[in-house]
Image 1 (cartoon, rainbow, N blue to C red):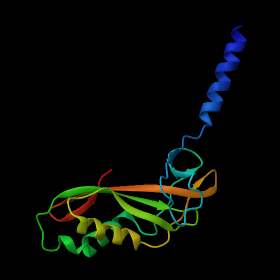
Image 2 (cartoon, rainbow, N blue to C red):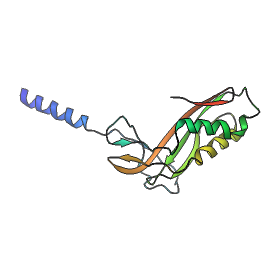
Image 3 (cartoon, rainbow, N blue to C red):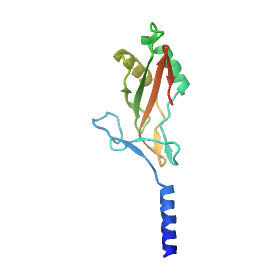
Length: 152
């Protein structure tokens, strides 16, 4: 009886150690350009065989562009706010959706932030088990004294 339980325990451990934990996003409305609306994933790069979509520019460059191109903040040096933007990148590395998930206090500001993220260029598609897939990325930010920073 003991060898059976030991074998079962080792088998369970082996299976769990190789398991893929993948969060899938529920797509409620059609998204033009998506490769597979039933498999839009959020990658966890700490897990083996998962690679999140990679932006063509660094986070520092994104912040530099936000701080330079978002004109809403130019005459509001004391403005403070926060938000989150969600981006869906298809299996070919094309941004097919970019919209605010947690909106700021201003529709105009939200539109300008979306414009910056939409203009970043072609991404490297996310991968699961070395296969390119549709992925979702979130960027949380805050604005303190009219300056953008990313939250971790």
